Image (cartoon, rainbow, N blue to C red; front, side):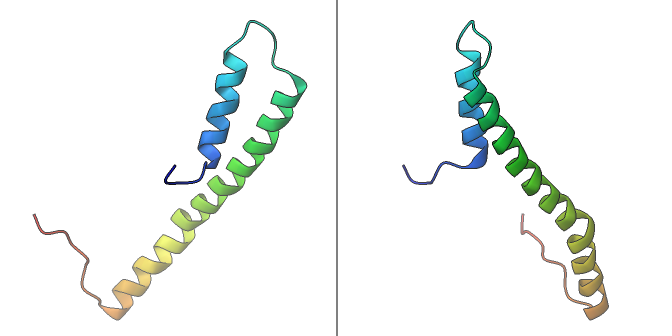
Length: 74
């Protein structure tokens, strides 16, 4: 593979495993999901912080320094 398995792939794998049978999820599957969900929440909290704090600070810095806008040519 060209890339390592990421968190979303692992969560998807647990979902596929649990969804594949007629039995209740095993304790191991529940524990694995719990651990992966905690890691996902950590990453989502980091993203929220970036979007709410750091992007605003970057925009303020760009305006303060009067830097040109980065645009895309059409």
